[in-house]
Length: 176
Image (cartoon, rainbow, N blue to C red):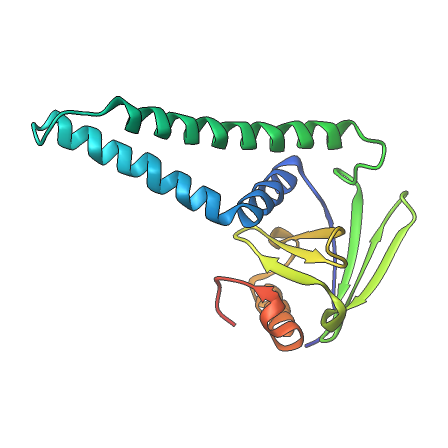
Protein backbone atom coordinates (compact mmCIF):
# COMPACT_ATOMS: atom_id res chain seq x y z
CA UNK A 1 0.00 0.00 0.00
CA UNK A 2 1.34 3.39 -0.98
CA UNK A 3 1.31 5.94 1.86
CA UNK A 4 -1.90 7.96 1.92
CA UNK A 5 -1.87 11.59 3.11
CA UNK A 6 -5.14 13.28 3.87
CA UNK A 7 -6.55 16.23 5.79
CA UNK A 8 -10.01 16.45 7.27
CA UNK A 9 -12.21 17.87 10.01
CA UNK A 10 -14.47 15.89 12.35
CA UNK A 11 -18.08 17.07 12.27
CA UNK A 12 -20.80 16.74 14.89
CA UNK A 13 -22.49 14.17 12.62
CA UNK A 14 -19.29 12.06 12.62
CA UNK A 15 -19.04 12.28 16.40
CA UNK A 16 -22.75 11.46 16.82
CA UNK A 17 -22.45 8.38 14.60
CA UNK A 18 -19.44 7.13 16.55
CA UNK A 19 -21.15 7.83 19.89
CA UNK A 20 -24.30 5.89 18.99
CA UNK A 21 -22.24 3.03 17.57
CA UNK A 22 -20.36 2.89 20.86
CA UNK A 23 -23.64 2.85 22.79
CA UNK A 24 -25.09 -0.01 20.74
CA UNK A 25 -21.81 -1.92 20.85
CA UNK A 26 -21.57 -1.56 24.63
CA UNK A 27 -25.21 -2.51 25.27
CA UNK A 28 -25.73 -4.90 22.37
CA UNK A 29 -27.72 -7.57 24.24
CA UNK A 30 -30.01 -5.19 26.17
CA UNK A 31 -30.83 -3.33 22.93
CA UNK A 32 -31.49 -6.60 21.12
CA UNK A 33 -33.84 -7.54 23.96
CA UNK A 34 -35.48 -4.10 23.70
CA UNK A 35 -36.18 -4.60 19.99
CA UNK A 36 -37.52 -8.11 20.62
CA UNK A 37 -39.82 -6.98 23.45
CA UNK A 38 -41.15 -3.93 21.60
CA UNK A 39 -41.54 -5.90 18.35
CA UNK A 40 -43.26 -8.74 20.20
CA UNK A 41 -45.61 -6.28 21.89
CA UNK A 42 -46.54 -4.79 18.53
CA UNK A 43 -47.27 -8.25 17.10
CA UNK A 44 -49.23 -9.09 20.26
CA UNK A 45 -51.29 -5.90 19.89
CA UNK A 46 -51.97 -6.71 16.24
CA UNK A 47 -53.06 -10.25 17.11
CA UNK A 48 -55.34 -8.94 19.86
CA UNK A 49 -56.84 -6.37 17.48
CA UNK A 50 -57.54 -9.13 14.95
CA UNK A 51 -59.44 -11.08 17.59
CA UNK A 52 -56.88 -13.77 18.52
CA UNK A 53 -57.47 -13.21 22.22
CA UNK A 54 -57.59 -10.37 24.69
CA UNK A 55 -54.68 -8.05 25.28
CA UNK A 56 -52.89 -8.14 28.64
CA UNK A 57 -51.85 -4.61 29.68
CA UNK A 58 -48.72 -5.97 31.39
CA UNK A 59 -47.19 -6.72 27.97
CA UNK A 60 -47.62 -3.10 26.91
CA UNK A 61 -46.28 -1.84 30.24
CA UNK A 62 -43.10 -3.92 29.82
CA UNK A 63 -42.67 -2.76 26.22
CA UNK A 64 -43.13 0.86 27.29
CA UNK A 65 -40.59 0.41 30.10
CA UNK A 66 -38.00 -0.98 27.69
CA UNK A 67 -38.73 1.78 25.17
CA UNK A 68 -38.29 4.35 27.94
CA UNK A 69 -34.95 2.78 28.89
CA UNK A 70 -33.81 3.09 25.26
CA UNK A 71 -34.82 6.75 25.19
CA UNK A 72 -32.94 7.40 28.45
CA UNK A 73 -29.83 5.78 26.98
CA UNK A 74 -30.11 7.90 23.80
CA UNK A 75 -30.62 11.02 25.93
CA UNK A 76 -27.42 10.17 27.80
CA UNK A 77 -25.52 10.01 24.52
CA UNK A 78 -26.94 13.36 23.42
CA UNK A 79 -26.01 14.88 26.79
CA UNK A 80 -22.45 13.55 26.36
CA UNK A 81 -22.26 15.00 22.85
CA UNK A 82 -23.38 18.44 24.08
CA UNK A 83 -20.86 18.28 26.94
CA UNK A 84 -18.08 17.38 24.50
CA UNK A 85 -19.05 20.28 22.23
CA UNK A 86 -18.60 22.69 25.16
CA UNK A 87 -15.36 21.07 26.32
CA UNK A 88 -12.11 22.94 25.67
CA UNK A 89 -10.58 19.56 24.72
CA UNK A 90 -13.08 19.05 21.89
CA UNK A 91 -11.47 18.07 18.59
CA UNK A 92 -14.59 18.80 16.53
CA UNK A 93 -13.83 21.22 13.74
CA UNK A 94 -10.05 20.94 14.23
CA UNK A 95 -7.82 20.28 11.23
CA UNK A 96 -6.59 16.67 11.30
CA UNK A 97 -3.84 15.37 9.07
CA UNK A 98 -3.35 11.65 8.65
CA UNK A 99 -0.66 9.57 7.03
CA UNK A 100 -1.62 5.95 6.47
CA UNK A 101 0.75 3.27 5.28
CA UNK A 102 0.67 -0.53 5.24
CA UNK A 103 1.64 -0.90 8.92
CA UNK A 104 0.87 2.31 10.84
CA UNK A 105 -1.11 5.51 11.07
CA UNK A 106 0.04 8.96 12.09
CA UNK A 107 -2.53 11.52 13.18
CA UNK A 108 -1.76 15.17 13.90
CA UNK A 109 -4.20 17.82 15.10
CA UNK A 110 -3.21 21.38 14.33
CA UNK A 111 -3.34 23.69 17.32
CA UNK A 112 -3.93 20.94 19.89
CA UNK A 113 -0.42 19.50 20.14
CA UNK A 114 -1.60 16.01 19.21
CA UNK A 115 0.78 13.88 17.20
CA UNK A 116 -0.02 10.17 17.48
CA UNK A 117 1.72 7.39 15.62
CA UNK A 118 0.44 3.86 16.10
CA UNK A 119 1.12 0.55 14.42
CA UNK A 120 -2.12 -1.13 13.37
CA UNK A 121 -1.03 -4.27 15.21
CA UNK A 122 -0.81 -2.23 18.45
CA UNK A 123 -4.27 -0.61 18.19
CA UNK A 124 -6.75 -1.82 20.80
CA UNK A 125 -9.39 -2.28 18.09
CA UNK A 126 -10.85 -0.59 15.03
CA UNK A 127 -14.27 -0.47 13.39
CA UNK A 128 -15.41 0.56 9.96
CA UNK A 129 -18.82 2.19 9.85
CA UNK A 130 -20.70 3.38 6.80
CA UNK A 131 -19.12 6.85 6.83
CA UNK A 132 -16.00 6.55 9.00
CA UNK A 133 -13.29 4.46 10.61
CA UNK A 134 -13.03 4.38 14.41
CA UNK A 135 -9.44 3.71 15.55
CA UNK A 136 -8.93 2.92 19.24
CA UNK A 137 -5.32 3.59 20.24
CA UNK A 138 -6.30 2.47 23.77
CA UNK A 139 -9.65 1.15 25.04
CA UNK A 140 -10.48 4.73 26.14
CA UNK A 141 -8.91 6.77 23.30
CA UNK A 142 -10.54 6.77 19.88
CA UNK A 143 -9.73 8.72 16.73
CA UNK A 144 -12.16 9.09 13.85
CA UNK A 145 -11.22 9.00 10.18
CA UNK A 146 -14.14 9.96 7.93
CA UNK A 147 -14.31 8.05 4.66
CA UNK A 148 -14.98 11.32 2.82
CA UNK A 149 -11.28 12.10 3.39
CA UNK A 150 -10.33 9.04 1.30
CA UNK A 151 -11.07 7.86 -2.20
CA UNK A 152 -12.82 4.51 -2.54
CA UNK A 153 -9.53 2.89 -3.53
CA UNK A 154 -7.73 4.40 -0.54
CA UNK A 155 -10.50 3.28 1.83
CA UNK A 156 -10.31 -0.25 0.41
CA UNK A 157 -6.50 -0.30 0.78
CA UNK A 158 -6.75 1.01 4.35
CA UNK A 159 -9.42 -1.59 5.18
CA UNK A 160 -7.19 -4.33 3.77
CA UNK A 161 -4.20 -3.15 5.81
CA UNK A 162 -6.28 -3.06 9.00
CA UNK A 163 -7.66 -6.55 8.32
CA UNK A 164 -4.19 -7.92 7.67
CA UNK A 165 -2.53 -6.38 10.73
CA UNK A 166 -5.36 -6.46 13.28
CA UNK A 167 -7.15 -9.69 12.35
CA UNK A 168 -10.21 -10.15 14.62
CA UNK A 169 -9.72 -6.78 16.41
CA UNK A 170 -10.95 -5.03 13.26
CA UNK A 171 -14.68 -5.03 12.60
CA UNK A 172 -16.22 -4.24 9.24
CA UNK A 173 -19.20 -5.19 7.13
CA UNK A 174 -17.50 -4.17 3.93
CA UNK A 175 -15.34 -6.27 1.62
CA UNK A 176 -11.55 -6.38 1.48
